[in-house]
Amino acid sequence: MERERAIVAEELVKHYREGVQALAGISFTVRRGEIYGLLGPNGAGKSTTVRILATLTRPDRGRAVVAGHDVLREPGQVRRAIGYVAQASGVDRWATGRENLLLQGHLQRVPPRELRRRVDELLEQLGLLEAADRLVNTYSGGMRRRLDIAMGLIHRPAVLFLDEPTTGLDPESRALLWTDLQRLRAEGSVTVLLTTHYLDEADRLCDRLAIVDHGRVVVEGTPAELKAELQGDRVTLEVEGDTGQAVRALAGLPGVLETVTNGTEVIARVSEGATAIPLLVTVLERAGILVSAVTLSRPSLDDVYLHHTGHRYRSEGDTRVSSLAAGATRRT
Amino acid sequence: MGQFASDTFQLLTRHVRTTLRIPIWILVTLVQPVIWLSLYGQLFRRIVDLPGFQVTSYIDFLTPGVVVMTAFFGSAWSGMGLLNDLNDGVMSRLLATPVSRGAIIAARVLHAALTVIVQSSLILGLGVLLGASFANGLGGSLAVVLVAALLGSGFSALSNGLALLTRREETLISVVNFFGLPLTFLSSAFIASVLMPEWIRAIARFNPVNWAVEAAREAVLGNDWTVVLGHASLLALFALTCGIFATRAFATYQRSL
Image (tube, rainbow over all chains, first blue to last red; front, side, top):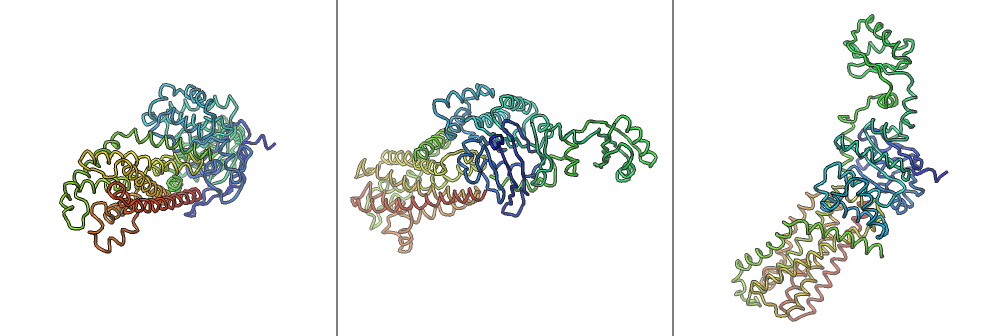
């Protein structure tokens, strides 16, 4: 049983010195060979969780086991078994890609004879062969990111941590990286814990995911399960007038499961979208609220997020970003 | 132990490679001592005429002083490289591997020492080109290089320790600027200690930079090897103390994450 669980996090709690609570008892289990996602906005505690699992930060309370080893009691064993790719790249800019990989391989105790072959293999796989002997300083963001991932994989780790792997990448590099990760999953030899604040990324890449908010897991499941949990369709109504009044008018109508406001929109989750729309519009117009636009959609992770946290997903411009910015300086 | 040695070697290789890839750094390293030697050499040329000054050629006197001054300043900035690693996430990446923790500090200190060895040899050569003649020949010069390397190791460890505790470039810059020149001038780098005011001489006795200057000068010009050995032992002790400090600072840094 224990062998099937690549990562176990139990009730991890972490406060930073300034009293900011980063983790409020986060728990989850990652099975061997899966890509598991921690999805949440900046400041939700994703990076801190990964840093604890990678033995870089000590939790105040709780327990974590990675690849069969306790992170506090056997950090050395954990380090041999993991690859860690942080948000901040961590490659040496004044070395070439190959030099970076060779040093990393040495530090990860890859036997010298195997190392050269492994380096070539990774450079080839990640399309870096041509740039291998150029200084990393000349690499594009996407190339640097792929080198990061190659560094994390040099010693064929049992567990790979990817902290926000596509943040700051252009769409093309992002798509390329997704393909690489999907290939990695197909090989099935490594367990991946990925953090992201992109809903589409989590949806697309993760076998299972946990939505993290304020330092704890809010809900966990496969992307399909999470979306299926929200039955029915989503109807978004752009209204002119009081959205609060609109919500009250719609609540309790037959077939309406949930209603929430979002700016000038009212979002209703309904059991059957096609039949509900005329009813919703009529009821609102009778209440004197003009509907200027209606959209019908299947539930997305966005709705899952909204449903479980009570607020809409905002990856940027969130008020909690400020606490993370402080966290970022601390982590350096 | 084997792991420590090989990790240190690999990380040292990385630091040396980085240094060699900064051409402007190499240029400055070569040009600056020339400026010091020729500028101070001209500026203070007549100083040897003062009664009590035991040498007759100021360039003979000055060269070991410039060697030590260069070693001191160069290694005092050593912590900057470590701060870059902290800021770039390189340190986190290293700490998530089984790398020997001691090797991370040891490689930085050895890199500073190695740099000092190369610089010191060059400066001694330049001194000779500018007319210095060292009574004790090659043996004396080797001793100077060794003394400078000991001083460099100590200040490099100190600088790295400070970098780990403060984690801010600004702090390191102000500390080095604050102590740099005073420690140089509270030594006999430019002027014979017999000509120093009593209180400066008293302070200089506790100044590692002065230990190095006295030892280096005695090694090339003097004949009292007990002075060289005594000061070198003090410098070794200083380097060891700073090394322990840096290791402690590293442990504190890791705990604070």
